[in-house]
Image 1: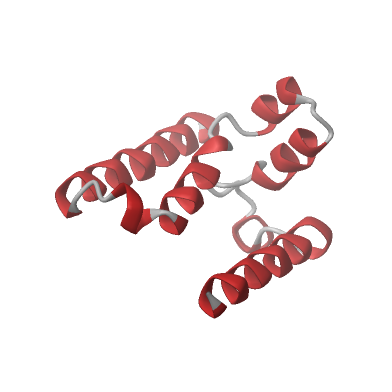
Image 2: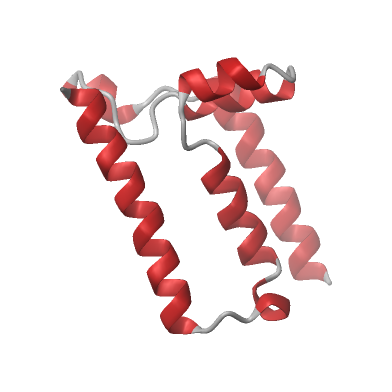
Length: 104
């Protein structure tokens, strides 16, 4: 129980830092968007219930939420290591494909 409370606290603290203080290091150093650029703005728009803008900022913004939810309930869901690896690979591939399309 303590681990879950601590995990939730860290998650909330992480979101506060991201929402108010974060600047993309990839964009600052290299001058190009990273695969996650626009994600913070998408979640801010979602908090304002502006779903259209959220998808406009980053089309894949629901995926990290799905992933965190899965991690929290991993033992109850129990899909197996092989399926988990397939899903994670698909998620990563989607982000990479979106990133390549945005670069060109």
